[in-house]
Every structure is written in C-alpha cells, then in structure tokens.
Length: 207
Length: 207
Image 1 (cartoon, rainbow over the protein chains, first blue to last red):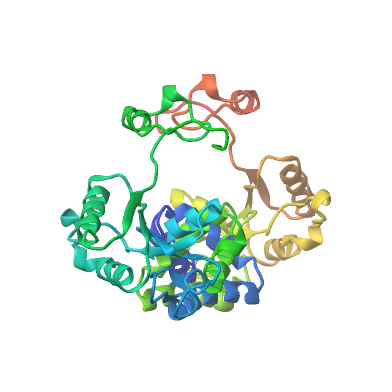
Image 2: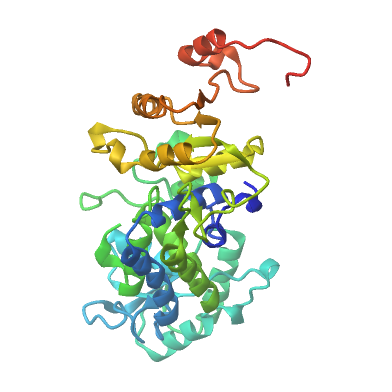
C-alpha cells in the first residue's frame, strides 16, 4: 500500500507506528488503527497511556532482574517461596511460562539472554556476575539451568557451571524429553534419544 | 494465561489494553508489549501519542465524510479531480482501496455502512441525506455505487437509487466478474454467471 494515498497525515503516522511492531504489516496496522478510531476518546487515551506509563515506570527487580513495579519483585519478596533454589532463565517471558505451570516454588534469575559471540553478547552483557554474587551471599542449595538447548544456551550453561564450580551448590538442568501427550513418531531424534538416555524409574507416585 | 501470574500491574494493564484489539490475544499482546519495553522511551511515547493524537485531532471531511486532517479532505479539495462523478462506498477503507487502483479520478461519498435492520442501522444512521443534497446542489452527472454485494448492500443500493430517481443523474454499479488472473474453475457460480450476463464487447483498445 503506497504511503502517498493516505488522506490523513495523522492516520499515516499512527499506521506507521503500529507497523513497526513485530509481525504487524501495514494492512493489519491500518485495520487496528481504524478500530481504535471508532473507540471513545478516553479508551484510546488509556490504550496509548498504558504503553507510555509502562515504559516510563517499569523497573527490573534488583535481585532477580524480572519485570516488576517495585525495587524487589513479588516473587523475590514472597516469604513463602523457597529461597534456597534459583531457576536461571533467559527472559522475563520464561519466568511467566514457568510460573504458569504452578510447579515451581523457588526464586528466579533472569540473565537477559545467552552468551552469543556472533551477536556480540559476552558474559559481561548478561546478569551472570549478579547470579554468582547471589549464590555466594545467600544460602542457595540448588541452581536450575533452564536455558534454551542451542549452542549458545549450552555455552552459557557451561560458563555458569564453571563460575559456580567453587561453590558447594547443586546444579541441575530441566528435563528434556518427549512432551506429555506427544507421540514418539513425531518427536525429533535428538529429543527422543535424550529421553531414553535420561529415562527415570517408574513408580506409583510418578505422574 | 492467568492474570494473577503477571509480576507487574503496569505490564498486566498494557497487555490488557493491547488484547482488546481485534485479532490480538493475550499471548500476542504480551509479545508486542515486551517488544515495546525493549525500545527507547521516546519511541514508545511516539507510539502511544500517535494513537491519542489521531483519535483527538482526526476530522471527517464535511463533504464526503472521508477521514481527513482538514474540514474538507484532500480529494474533495483537489481541483484536478472530476467533480461530476461521485463514488459511493461504505467505509474509509474502501476509499483507500479504490484510490490504490489509481483508476478513478472522481470524488467519493462515504456512507459509514449499509442499511441493516438486523443491526439496527436505518437510512438515517448513514450519510444518505447528505449524498442526495450533494447530487441536488452540485453538478453531478454520475453516481457509482460501490457497496458490498450482500442483501444489505443491495437494499442500500436500491434505497439510494429511489432517492436519486427524481434527479437527472446516471447511476451505475461497479462491475462484478471473474478477477483478473482468476481461473474459471475456482470462481463461484454467482460471480461466473454474472460475468457471462454482463459480458462486454471485445475490442483492441480493451485491456
């Protein structure tokens, strides 16, 4: 869609801003903007201001670097969480994913990515130093590595493992295997192979 | 994704606002909001403000009811457009679609919808009166009806036709037929049937 054919510079500008978002092209942007135009003025204001306010006022937890409204996030300040376990993840989205499982009661540590020399991301660009400090300072008995199973993720796992080797802390990684309900036929060979190597004993209590 | 699991009320609010948009669920909303969070503060401000400003300052052309930055839109005020032809469309999006073809040099009239008793939309809710006034007042020789081929569109076409019957104005509708490059095999029967009924003479100048 040519830019010159828009009858309004304001419309053009709004569509242009929307189309910057990932996965939103100019056609979708136009549809969304025309939808907003039909809404009440205060609804559009609360939409626009919610983004501006979020970007302006958001803070990252000083302990785990998760997204937060306060200096220490709700998870780190929750007295009922297990403070002896730290789950290391790449992004705040990973924290949400694990929280959604409702299976984990420990704390988190958001690295902000993985070591990737190709992208110019070294250990100093990630929150690895603060993780080591947490483990040194607090009474941590287990660090769970939940990074992606890529070359970069494995490199980062190994880097963290080496950094924590001096500490008397148990280091684990999340289990990889055939997904619950997944069929063997459609599982990739690496995953299936690993699920056989890392097989676990079948007990009555296992679910 | 449960609402309670968000670690930030600001984030929750922004995701909630985004997820109100059509075709955007909570997962996509979260992805877009986290994308915005990574951007510079002024970029997010220009995003939010572009929507607020659009909604606050947009006006509709007093002549054709198209979206505009000024009281009379760029098309209506353009002296090189053919002022004797008015193309009647449902929405501002239709104006953009026709403008994109670069085949039409006349003016437009945006109805704002079609007559639909089921949705409680009668002729008084649409810009039909102002269309009749334009045809009465200005020197209009042709009105092109470009509404959708639904029951409601046909009703509206007929209503406008009756309203303009007293005027000495030519009333036409856009051609329906097999799309350019379309194959007969995959064209629906109604469209194919109509393209045979409304066949046109083959000439050298026809392209």
